Image (cartoon, rainbow, N blue to C red; front, top):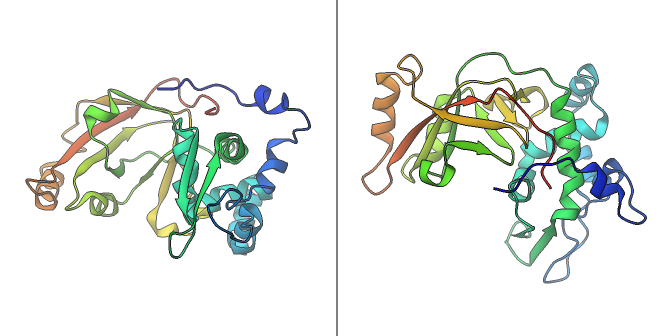
Length: 250
């Protein structure tokens, strides 16, 4: 897995480069498309959609407007193109909504400022309150390895929501038993009822043996009821690494 390093030096070394906030504000989601399509200025669009209550929560938390909008944009669905690059991809390709055509591509250098602003925003928030966090994932333990580190990982306090994500399709159900790097972003979210706790790019979660007080017999029963022989669901228990979050993905 690609190493995690600070982004600042490589961004500032580019001739004529602005800072990450300015580059984030200039991000055009549809800058490189296979057909003609109007510009989609991500920051401007997301700012217009950000409710006053979310903006006020950002002020109370000591966030800049750009940082608040970055978190809100993540919950709107920007994670779909941010996180592939945060996990190490050089670019990400996606279809223009609502029909999925034409296809557009964004590159690492274009998305790095968004990632940096988002990580900076999360670093200003306190660790989420203790309690088990859940995540449904298409990735199995064989693909994940014993230490999960790289991009962002969204989790929820809602067991049912996490289980529904892998119901019938299979994959893994994560139970994060303890951590220090997850940040509760529900007050900045487009979907506050999900109770999302987001782990910044650079966080590490280590696989551990499941505690019977966390993965109870009732949890196992519900998982068995949700899986099928063709689509099993693997329960993976995790704890945050002592070192916590380490800066930003390049």
